[in-house]
Image (cartoon, rainbow, N blue to C red; front, side, top):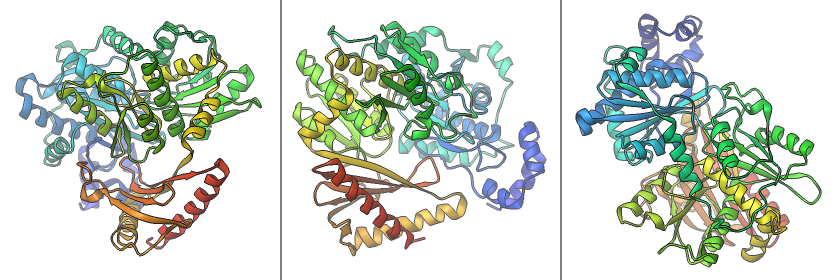
Length: 567
């Protein structure tokens, strides 16, 4: 794309949005290139980008173009019965982008069901199935910094679209001229005409009831007076999480006031990701003042949840997504076995970068473990396969190391409302028996061996950054993958290299390399699908926590030096 020519075209035609007009009038050339050198890439997760003017940015024009392409795709399959659910989170312009998309769908004859207020991302997946629509769109950038927003697309099964569908939709988007080919009505007029309808509160109530049905307490005693501090991180979780906890008997809840209300600027947590310690810091401060037992935080679109728990010294320890996942997996399995509620052919699904100890726990309870590529859409896909075989009830849990959890097939994406509810139930169950989550975690390590999983991210912004990431992956593949010219890391010999770029174990092709090393250690390298980052996952098994930390540190240092060779 000739970015200067496209910039001039935007100056001529992109006149409806005053923010875009202002940015175009003051845009420096170095910014201009990044804003216009390409179109936002559309894939199985839709697309995500920095908010602003340009073809490589999130704005009303790129959202409208994507909605036109998606409309063409839906009409080609569903004809006059095509319909869509739209939801949005607390991010900057999310409500504007949702209404823009709705106005385009309606003008194209696609029936629109719009959540009337911001809601968690899993409510879109739920509403698709509940209302039997053809597709769904969620305006969100999940846990990214405030400058980002995104457009997430779901199929009629409530799961993120398949690679086949993404390719077809992308083809329709690409052949659409962003200014000349988009049909867009007036939102209020389309609403008055009934072509856009607001989703009723009954659907949200049905969603929350479905979450409640995931309880595995089965009437046992639980201390629901435990002191909980909760932060929605200025996102969508406040109403549904506090409502479900209140309706199920948890009344001792303190909200982090500065992070209670929706605010896309995220003033007290610039990177609103419960994986990051800074995002949990204010909640922990509250917990210390209130002497709380548990700290919960959900990300802005409320599909990830992080926790911190009080230790014997009165300090608060953050649990990783892996650790919380292990605890939930063991709790769900133990309760189901204890009460005779384990389904036939019980199945758990996790991603390939999630702690391998999950397989040991599942095996201990006679549960089948399925490993899938990174991304919860692949977990949702497996639930769909089970449903087609009449075995949806076999699915008991799905999880990923990046703080995503789901314990039922009522949605096909990770659900932090479900995660928060189950974490509180698990915590109160053990509290009634004088057991802390840290005690229980240590019990698992004693039984299965200590396992440390870490994530290291390297940022590569813009066109130059994309090229660097591609070079690193090529270098890693040729040196460690195909050639095996490097023996290993931190003294751990590599014995197997799994190149998912070729398609393995029936999984789709994906730019992921996994090195299996002696001593149950592994390294996974992959570019992020949603951010300009290269991600390295290190998994170390050792006798003690201290031994694992030493090995992990050495491995991380050697990997960083190794990657520098290809930049």
